[in-house]
Amino acid sequence: MLLKSTHIFVGGCFLSGALLLQKGRITAIYPEDSKLPQDEEFLDYGDRRILPGLFDIHTHGYRGWAARAGTQAAIEGFSMAIASAGVTSFLPTVGEHCPQEKQILQAIAAARNFHKGANVLGAHMEGPFLNPKRHGGFFPEQFLAPSVTDAAALLDAADGAVRYMTFSPELDGADALQRYLQCRGVIVSAGHTDATAAEMQRAIACGLQASTHTGNAMRQIDRRDIGALGAALLDKNLYNEIICDFVHLSPEMLRLMFQLKGSMDRFIVVSDSDEISGQAPGTYRIDGVMYRLTPEGAILLEDGTLFGSCKDVLFGLKNLVEALHVPFADALAACTIHPAQLLGCSEHKGTLQPGKDADLVVLEDDYIVAATYVMGRCVYRKGMPLPENQDFLRRCRSLGKEE
Image 1 (tube, rainbow, N blue to C red):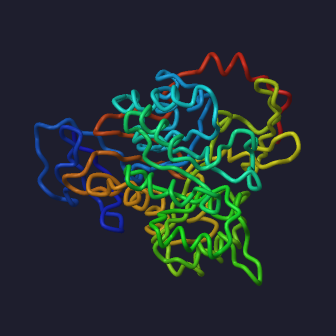
Image 2 (tube, rainbow, N blue to C red):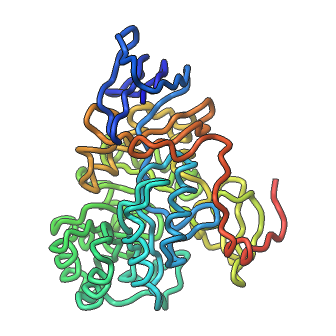
């Protein structure tokens, strides 16, 4: 198949031409006026932008689907829903310790072979080895003390699906846990942490690779101890997840973070979305818990606790480019090649190049998704009805909309 556009993002800039997609890969890129193969199906997207597909390495759910549902069907519905937001690769995120935790991981493992939505690259375990002092929207009783034995049981049950784990490096037993996870090939990130700068720096020296939703649910910068946040920003090699809805981090804070880090090379835009994300702003009750979705993008619990974002990675990309005036190439890299590098799949994902997977998103004006392609297959077109989660519809009751 040939996809033509006057705005194909290749090599850090837009070019006019065509992409040749064959057997799930990009096999050629033709500049404008090149002679094109005559026997290929042809689709002309005009002046719409064709970009590498987006990643989301921290998302609990979207549009009524949730990783915690614990079934393969739920992960597959999640995969199709998130593709409508331009995401072509994601890590369903498990955010609480519960009796069905192993079942959830097994469902994610089984969904890795699903081909009708975004690539399920594995699981992000946000816990359960987290500090109750920084529980955020979680309940402290959902956390466990760091334990190699407990971690081994989870990893063994997950059939290799756990790619990424958030833990608190300052807790007793966390050093041994970090070493064990790294030996098992799990990417380790610090989050929900009360670590001092020294504790964070020790974890970095031992191979810590990222900080989870940087700036949120972690010890802040103080004049006498720059804490986990300061240590995460001072280290030039540590990847920093950022939620760019302008609620979790103000525009001014993001500017400070970029300047302190020195470049955009280690930032990764994430959504931290949940099953209620994508719904209209308003108040909802799900399983007896009240959530308020604000027009600005926050999900708030009844006591005002920030629970996550109801926006997506594409919204974050738009904010970076249109509001903060980050160069488009830098902002896009934080949504594509940087997470691919962290996950070790940048050789075949994250940019549009011959030989790489044909994962791409086509954008209309104002960052509206016209189409999403995964491994060369169009898994979403604008206006396509998305699968509805009947269980979510039964559990979710709207208590009023907001303007």
